Length: 270
Ligand code: SAH
Image (cartoon, rainbow, N blue to C red; front, side):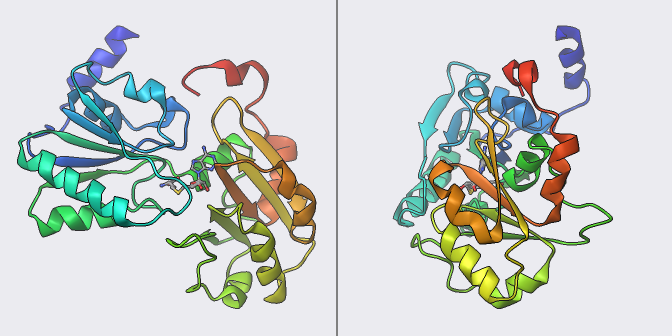
């Protein structure tokens, strides 16, 4: 194994220059789902600013000397803290640190990575974006649910179930969303799931449409709860967070594709 990983060094990773910020996606939870570039960045960073959903196992891969800073916020808290985080990234970079901003899933998917990148651009801080596996795709895969299938859906719609105030996103045209795609993947949607279901049905979505909720996706405690759009009220009490909700025919594939079971779940990396 060691020899195999040593071979990576020969590939020539891009240098993590002092005074730069890398916005890195950690993947949906299981530490094995980070990219090679992300893994490399962990080994080089001087400061790691990480979110609530980032695995301890990943953080432990960084050198003991790396400063670890928790920047967690869950469930649509005020955005003042976001400005603080962006400012801190700038300050550390200006001090000549290699700053690793480690975010759950993909940094640019419902993760405010764009706001942070914007703050860096505004101050002329060089940065790199290292994509990650987003929960809305990787989380489904661990539940045996394909995001697309040729026979059922040629499009997927991603949405967030709450905005920065914690309310149902007011900018969403729910009637249009209801008809836009056979498969709708919802982030941060547990709190308002009942209202979301009502809005989609009011927009013409079939109450018999299948719905699956994958909680703690890719983590040992992953749980999948299935219902239909019309029976969401019956499962709400079972739901914990973080959870990804998928609406549409693809969840039927779980019957055949539910591969991540039994002893497979005991592997520490995924
Ligand atoms: N940037 C992240 C999303 C951040 S928003 C990404 O690309 O995945 C946080 C939301 O992501 C959670 O409310 C939940 O909807 C989803 N999520 C993140 N990790 C998850 C996990 N392990 N299991 C289920 N949902 C998850």
